[in-house]
Amino acid sequence: MTVGSVRAMALRYSDLSVLYMDAHADLRDEYQGSAYNHACTARRISEVCPVVLVGLRSLAAEEREAITALRIPTFSRTAKPLSEEDRASVLECLTPHVYISVDLDVLDPSLMSAVGTPEPGGLGWWELLGLLRMVGQHRTVVGFDIMELTPREGPVACAYTAAKLAYKLIG
Image 1 (cartoon, rainbow, N blue to C red):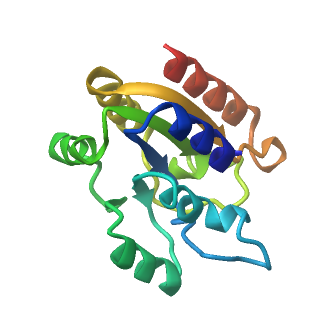
Image 2 (cartoon, rainbow, N blue to C red):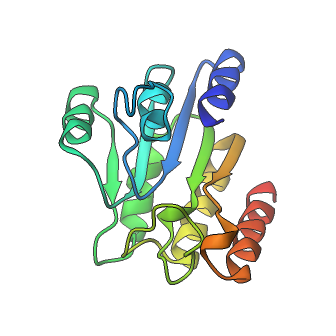
């Protein structure tokens, strides 16, 4: 879904970039016989417009090579929360018009366990909102998506958290 949305937005905004928030790089050229598998989404986006990866905690060797070859700005999640300086660096990589894609596994599983591929050590709620707020204040957000909610994989509170995030992004 993200690839189609980004392609449509790129037709409208020649200066589009994508803030891609995910625990996984999703930069494989092909996965399980498809170039449009979920593990290829950021790769397909990079063919359309610049993409900035935030929250990365898991990637394959092929994806590490793609990050270098395609010069994709990457902000991995480490033991330290994103600082004001980190958020400013993310902002510098984004163009005036931004599409935001949030894969919910970017959040720490203690907050968001209802995803298909949880990874320990994700972003916190306020950390995520701080970055999104900064982007919204300094760039024009032209669209967004929220991906990978799997309600059966976690408590009901996860669906509420996803809904609250959608509400925040709309506002």
